Image 1 (cartoon, rainbow, N blue to C red):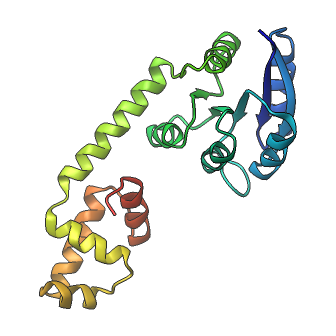
Image 2: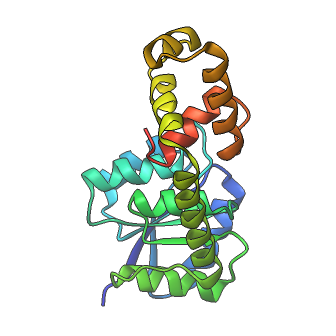
Length: 209
């Protein structure tokens, strides 16, 4: 088999250099490019035709998860492995939904990293037991959140997401403004958010609206 062609995407130059140095020692791998942002990655994808992209989540401009979704639309043959410090279930789930083939925490050892790259290059998904548990845990929480909201709360939530005021919602549902506010407070408590903006964002993430 020919060498596995890899691009490393991370906004920290020292991390990129360390990763490139580490991977370059393996005769089965070839680093064909590096990028400090999603925008740089898109340019490289057209120029280098990689098999694998190692990508961080937090970067200036478009984040890594959004970049995966956009890049996969134009380069479906390229496989992405998220390499990040974010060990939270919602990031893992979003990465998978956006088309990632693997997810690694940056403290992963060299053996696991190489295994992940080779597995993904062969068309397999790579999520170790820790990452799989995070994913399962987050999906369970999402399911519970759906069950917790009443039908009337979901009605209020939809109207809130449309930008309706408390007064408008109250008039539409034939209830008092106080009742609408009570529903809003209860929804924020159930979804564990602090304000209306977070409520809408979380509800959208959970595909409730």
